[in-house]
Amino acid sequence: MTISTATTTTSPARAPLAGFAAQLLLLAALAATVGLSTPGWVAGVAYGAVLCGLLAVALRRSGMRDLGWANSVTLGRAILTGGVTALLLSGAPKLLVVTIAAVALAMDGVDGQIARRTGTTTSLGARFDMEVDAYLILALSAAAAVEYGWWALAIGAFRYVFVAAAWVAPWLNAPLPPKFSRKVVAAQQGVMLAVVVSGLLPTWLAVAALAVALGSLAWSFGRDIAWLYSAHRRRLRLAGVAPWDAGVEATEIAHACASPMSASSTPAGATRLWLRIQAQS
Image (cartoon, rainbow, N blue to C red; front, side):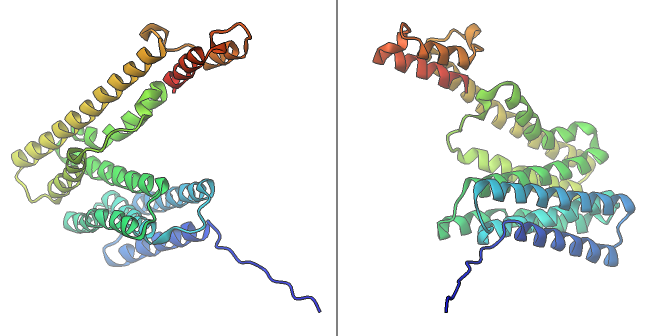
């Protein structure tokens, strides 16, 4: 008699599906208690579908079979952010919106602590956490912009403009050295926006708080961009590439490496060409 054994594995799509179901439950609870408008429902459902769809793709690409505790906390924050989105578009009471946003912001440090203490820190988890923060800031800045001027939307748009710029200038994708001040500025945005959106501040003080938030964010991004550009120029100098020649095709360099008469036939030449290729990335 032959006994066959089957190994069961967790589908990477299970957690995103559970997350989408939780998003729908939260929207239903909000609709039953405070009420959601049609735009709020549509935005909340669309947000949940995009969130969980992208998460499923990310899990599949990373080879992870499940989220783990840290990423589950981040998913919980993301679901609350979907509730904030639906409430904002439904004209819900500001204090309720801010309360839910405050819970999501307070949970920001929990997922990182869990990941570090359990040794489950991953690049996917760090990116997931960052994107949830960025979207929540964008939603709150849009709410502030409606009340105090559309210039406040720049607070939430900074991150997405930076990502778009990186498509044109790939050197912006280089890793940055850790900075505590960067974390302080990031945390400050959420707190200030939540207080401003609550409507508890007089107009002049709310505008001043938004100006401080935008100014500190511009300083933080400006400093990081300057550092990245300086590092990019240093890589170009090491590779012997003139700034105006930085767009040289890596395929041309690879062709030169393949040539028997190329400078890469010597160790120094090969190193130079390798550095030149790295300067393109």
